[in-house]
Image (cartoon, rainbow, N blue to C red):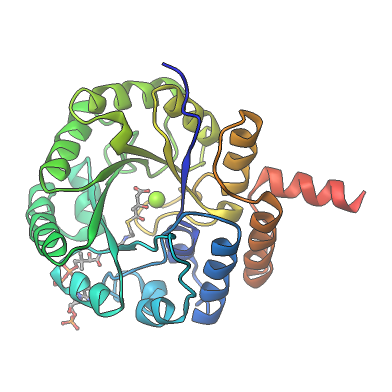
Length: 302
Ligand code: HMG
Ligand code: MG
């Protein structure tokens, strides 16, 4: 299969990245980050999560962030929603697109959302029905598709089951997530091929954490399978509070560098993206996790 000529990048740094910060990050910093990412030309920016503040305190300022960002026409600002309470709050905050998130293993489902896989699916069915009725679009994320911190290896059939259930609920896109970054190119291909037997590859997306340094390679493996939508975090921010030791998502700068090299169209401006990464790294007081951002900074300083 030819690799796609155009890729849709989904920036998840403000949510997946910052949710994991131990120190509170002021809403004003999150807002400026999102505005800078908008100006860099990113078409989809996951802005925040309407989850329980007891579970993820860092996302407690969700409504403030949604009210503060400058929404550019044509750019989508999805938010995570775990249940009807979250949906209600997301709609009140003006969300037009939501993300429901299930897991391929029972242990991760329990740790992340305090319920079994099937209880989670029942909640998402309610959320999807109501969201679609109110004219919102729904994306579905599946965690631990390439390894679970509690159960180890994950069978592709477990991912297929979740993907089919989310598809049946009306998710327009389903994201295969390597939550802990243990996946390899071979395993990535195997799981995508298994899911693509049931759901067209055009409706699948990839979300790779970089714990084992495999994420850019896994993006390429997914591209070769025909996937043309990828989640990533500027400066490689983050991790998951319920996946101890897992590092952030693949850095947006690193994916963009690869895609630019392949001549794949994204609409994203590298220098503005790097400046957004620099802004948040300074605000957090630590160096970027993006290899490309580090290399470009070293080149500029030379
Ligand atoms: P629970 O404790 O079973 O829920 O949590 P509950 O219904 O018993 O409610 C407990 C309290 O939370 C109540 O408050 C509720 O009102 C409140 P109290 O009465 O005690 O004062 N509550 C809420 N508040 C605000 N917004 C809500 C909400 N829901 C309940 N939506 C629940 C169940 C699902 C709510 C909880 O487990 C939760 O919020 N989990 C989310 C965890 C999370 O955000 N994890 C990180 C995101 S997923 C991720 O990062 C993976 C991803 O990147 C893909 C990948 O890499 O794999 C997407
Ligand atoms: Mg994630």
